[in-house]
Length: 521
Ligand code: ATP
Ligand code: MG
Image 1: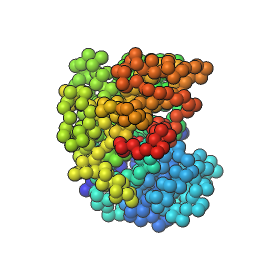
Image 2: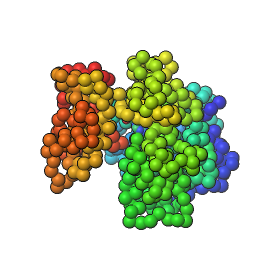
Image 3: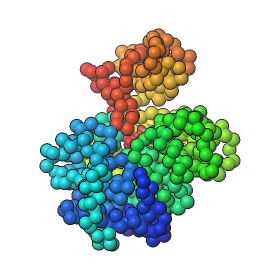
């Protein structure tokens, strides 16, 4: 059966004495990691954790977090990692909704949940990581034997993880993923990203989040060394990359942009090569060029979502990397790419027919894949809406070029339908971002008597600069088709964002749609 614990077994068998984890000021081999995992499983068992129970984690990327994955799985229990940047109300919602039994929390994050857990009856025990007094986790763990742990009987369809979505478009939804989905996703990712025992990964993306979640499986399975990054600080990233000769990183383009900035003051070392940096979120070709030419890191884009473990497409180019002219390569890598092994991916119209591969016809991405979730936890209705006739409807709109490469255009909910034309909010935002005085911008649909909807821009102006509504509109009309330019503009101090830094257009839109129902949802 396809059970996630196999990945650690492989690493111990083949790479037992290799460094598995490099954290603050210690290194653990795969054999040592395995011993701690056994201690943890015994510890959790002593607290009454059984197969199917949810174990919540609130921790930065760390030894404790990674060993948590396998310690929880050996019991057949369900790993429920929490975003470290939520508000107390969100923690209450998720801890209650998931019925987590035990919470393991890093001491630096404890204040975020202290009050919440005091009156949550489902939480039976809170264990604190990294307590500087050396009480807490380490002394608790040391009571238990590191010897082989008698594992629970696990079926491959059993649930391994309960992950909550970012909540960009509403309340976070709890996504149930089986051992099988996570396992097959890992195989596919290790193939496309060519993970090997020669790799040293820096864990930049938080492991609790959609993109960081899968990597502790595929880098472990291949005996790669995993360097922990507890804080997303660009200078710290540069230091660790150099010090530990990191070969691969996954990160958000916004963070990558900061790393480029940090490197401007300091040339990348020529002693070693970062073989690839993996990112989502559709960055423009100019950005890909900056990464490949200034940093000399290969760039790969991936696309996915929590509901699919998360990745289903990649712009990794294999032989094309050497064969194609640079300009073309950057253009291709700015797209989400083609479907990964094990995932069928289509872009379909309202009737479910595939749109032509002409680079302009827009449809919704749907997928039938090994990695699709079992469903949303305690939300049958949303599950049925998402998975129809065996196809998961992503809610993301895209076009396909003649080479079969998918390019994300917008979220379905964010597309503006004006006089029968679809306007990508992302395209209008890209035009706004070219204005030197604009710091941040979001474009949403607002109701309009004549056109149904029209684009409205919400703009944050850079400090010390001024800008009028008319200037913004005229600027966009120079860059875009007339009907795509915003018809009106509001200026605000700050855009509403989720904990993972995504702009919440649903919150912005609300103000404009007070008494009317927006048909698109
Ligand atoms: P919620 O579902 O709670 O509203 P969310 O959709 O932001 O939040 P995630 O699962 O964390 O939650 O994010 C997945 C989404 O991120 C995708 O549906 C897509 O809109 C966006 N995304 C992921 N990869 C890319 C990419 N390469 N390019 C553009 N957008 C991407
Ligand atoms: Mg989503």
